[in-house]
Image (cartoon, rainbow, N blue to C red; front, side):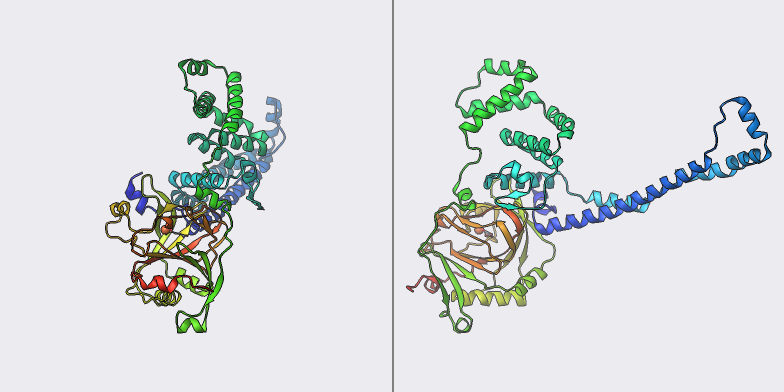
Length: 490
Ligand SMILES: O=C(O)CCC(=O)C(=O)O
Ligand SMILES: [Fe+2]
């Protein structure tokens, strides 16, 4: 993929707002489709009326025919029908109908998601499945973690997922998805088997065997290789099942990184933290004290509860015009995981939020700093990264627009019921992205050197539309902030 494409092309899969556009498109398509089907149905109805009108007793022999046309009424009727009715019906059959709908449908299809979007969504589904260790059989019937939804996957959905797993070498999961497709539609097995054949059973078996051999630290000998090449279908099936059994036993398919452990909610609980109302920073807070929750003392991470109202969130979103692609990872291939919009000019909203941050942290903002609004797609996430301006970042962000952030503030502005937590893998800390709250943390130590413990990531969103206002706290350079925010004994 050309990197220009990645930056400028509009994709639907990366944000819930993009997906909403697709849902509207699908509805519009269906409306045209159904009008078109009705038009065609009407035509078929009319053709049947004509056919009914033509119905008359059969005249099988020459004598019967001769007798029939010897009657003046029949003779007249025959000539009139052939001369007047036939051309009319002929004309009718050839008349193109529903052209308006066909053209509209063509326009909609030309704006439909391309294979990039399709592939990103497959990756997103895979990310959700592996990060949270969900089972294909549960996903297929609408059980995500312990929540059961009314939505189910179709067997074609399962087949697409099975094919994707196969392509990325996740053979065990591929097989489980094939099984799901068959469970849902045992009658469609022919198409499913065709798919397997299209992927070539032999290749599938070879890859499974190679993978098992690789995992058991044995080299793939020429002998094994030639056995595989010569195997018959039955032997291949046996090979697949015996290797899969061994493979499932020998290996855990998902690497258990600290990010994944955090996303699964498996970090040990922290108990020594307090919540308090900060009403000391300034006069404003004496009137409207803030509920602060200390997430970590060292390094200091704090959650401000209920600092942005629903009305302000709507106001913030109201400023949005065209969104850009948001991506994660600095190394190629970069992944588009969200749609973003930068509030760069000062608006009445941004002024108010600046003031709020100043009230929360006790700081005067020296200058206005851009806010990045992000809307994640389902499965959208952020790889573990630092927010400070590293050497690595310099390469992709020469103008330092990503900021040399002494601290970061994330305003949570979406409804996320599952997934989408902010994780600090090294600190074993995980934070729920609760709408209205803001998370604050330092990226640098007091001597302004980078604090590697500020490494953070975002778990794949399972259910919800994750909106965040990501504040570039470059202006908070003054070290006084550390005093203002350091924990005090309570
Ligand atoms: O949205 C979040 O929780 C974190 C986002 C983030 O890490 C970033 O934008 O740098
Ligand atoms: Fe970040």
